Image (cartoon, rainbow over all chains, first blue to last red; front, side, top):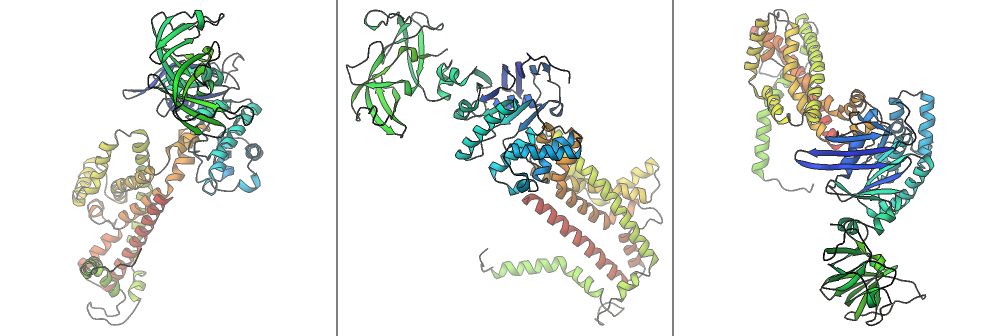
Length: 378
Length: 261
């Protein structure tokens, strides 16, 4: 493989499309992944994230567009001609081979000397924290789910690939093990400098592990960004809803804030809907009289007694419907004037700040800062 | 399973059916140990007839030929049938339904038709009848059986194993050799045993395509019977039954084990 220039991204998709029969699996897919990045493809099942990974691995050929690895077009390359390795959701360990031979498979295929294979297999097993003395001779059927996962990881990493593909690698593990492996995978990514491309439908996992992620929906990328960008500035209602929890509000852009509601420095719009009026920050998608849809995260909302709204905050009158005590937070469901339900997450801060003792049926004001409105496109 | 009373009618039907199926074979095997030379009355136990088989050069020759034909046709049919199964399952999934029908056709074709058509084909092509034509014929009728057994096994294997091998740097050939084939092995072995059994006791097709001097064991038995019924035939037939029974039993066990694995 000719040396690629250092500024080429590890992975680049340019307008890639793939259809099965008449159903598009992915449409006009364009994104880049930097070297050493931990990049996640996140979306509900059937959104095309696995197809994207399979296109990159070479198990599928794109109908249109171009896929580049380190600057080289690889559209027509067979899977074994690409410098990457993959960890499968089902692990896909070879049942007729021992752990040692599973991990050695790729090196044997590359005709490495026996001594080198032995040393590298041992090192790879230690890297994923499996004791070679205990596990080398076992069959995959004699391993637990977590151990199989580690063998699959060792089998891929032993080849020192430049890109590692992970297809829902933690899907089959129980919660505690999953959290553990999340930390370990992230650590391996930093330690080895290998580019990780990770497919998952678990938004929490994607936020926790990724440097950047692409949210996919209906065969397209809805948004690409860092976890904070995606969480704090979702571009569409789908992204806002899929990542974390969101309350949605609609209304028409009635005019610029002024008079009592004005906070001086803030330029934005007053949105009037059937639940009341509120102020949103400036946004390119808003025009006078146009429909506006916003999302607000439950933890960015606060509750006040009627008539006690802090200056400069948005407030909508509501009635408490119920409270759910979750320990770390208290989820309060309220009904707005238009019947819409909103969820407010109050932090449980112990004796520091006791949330007011709200009861079902109490009148209240749902309050939040105008800057915390996420104006949605389309 | 809990012990449940089986109605008398059911067990009686079962006994009669099994008797109907296996009584002739049991009688044959029993008489192969009968000291009395002429048929029907019991003259005491003997292994004489089996011993005598060893001194019949014509039978030994036929046995050798049957083994050679069986091994060659098994080898060919297993290789071709396995490849056909892999091609159908992995590379031609859409052609599979149509091709599947064509595949079963030889299984249901009356054997006498198959025999006659092969004879016509060979004489049209000018191929001299002999061991070659027998091997070709046996390979042909064994392939579909092997393919069916291997296809069943393929259905139970995980295709992602092959993708995993490729992502680890194995090309198509290495993937087949190192991953697909080991997965299929129980099915392949079961298919091979089936093929050998079919070849070893085939009479009709072989009758049409064998030349002078290329007499397989079943043909030898037939010509012996035509001359005279003697107890060595019983012994020989009993041997044939035992060989095929063992082969079928093994094939069945392998096929079953493969679905459980």
